[in-house]
Picture 1 (tube, rainbow, N blue to C red):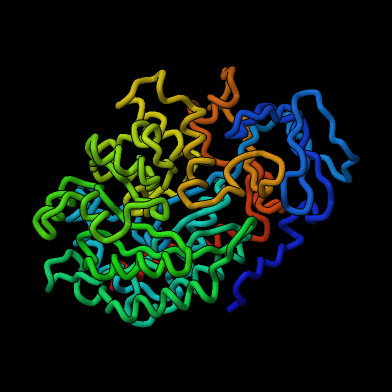
Picture 2: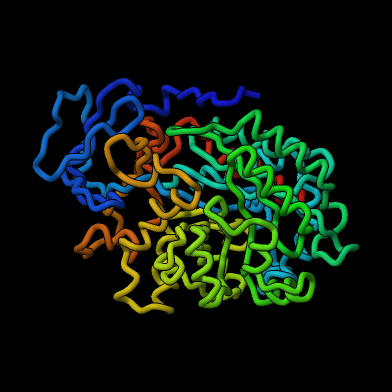
Length: 468
């Protein structure tokens, strides 16, 4: 494995220009900066960061060796996915769970997922990240909590795939300690002891966690959910996160079944449970957060605890509609997550922003939830949820992580406002994606990736997993 703090080796075939060359991304059709800056004249990229943000009609302060004409493109910060389960790309649209809510959905899938191998995980992660990249996503958080025999190095497998694709990732060391024998949901063969979990967590932080601007790989600690972990591992993870200054992640308040489980098992509502184990703070970001009451929203906001909104998954499993505008207004950073590709069945972040726009409008109305607000959740809000200030917006000094979309498909014909058209007309694929100044998507394709061959291998692995 590569040593900690090492950056991926950029593949020249994936890079239209090396980091050191000044590149002017010139005069975009429209630009969303996530901070109010005018980027109508484009951006200057140098040494993997944004050197200048140019207002309409403005030229670079110094000559640029290369120019990219963006006049047919809508320019965004690279989208940021705050919650996923990469391995679940192998169990998409499985008939036995198509029409079930969360708890029976999990009970049916746990035994299938327990058969996961390192080769399966490598393929599943490659597919998930490739799909995300093609949708304009440049940074992804994964919540991996399955470590059956033979998959003890699961996070290491994911690190290598992230580096190969040239993306950024927050890889969280998930865990399950509360099996069926002790009143939990997962089968016993999928749980681990606290000692094993904590030792591996410390190893991963030591080997891979990068700090500061431009970090490629970061590690978080992520006990899975109240119905699959003990209070002890939650407290121990919080202490370790404090000691090593890393972030904490878990599922919380996704369904009313989970709320009932917490009351029955711990005698606490979900946010009381969170506080009781030392997690109510700004180091934590939560997946879903659907069923918080007014007082809990105020407490989460005051603590700065972030929430990853997963609208498609919440609709797919009929979990409910989260109160994201109120959480954000109370002080909680709100980001977007595609969730696992067995509860969303896709890994497409620009489509997730569209779903967030529409689902939250059902709760708050059309005027309160604008395309700009939804795109803000997918960019700067997601960056805040992951504890990062170097990505998620277009500003001088920020990382050169960008997504550019064309509006020349039939679906956009007749549209007038380019930024709104991205979501309202259903953009689903970026034309160009840049990470750290390097082009990772060119003309809507992944350079040097044999997509049909990847699909063939991934499909074969999925069928083999289902066959047992």
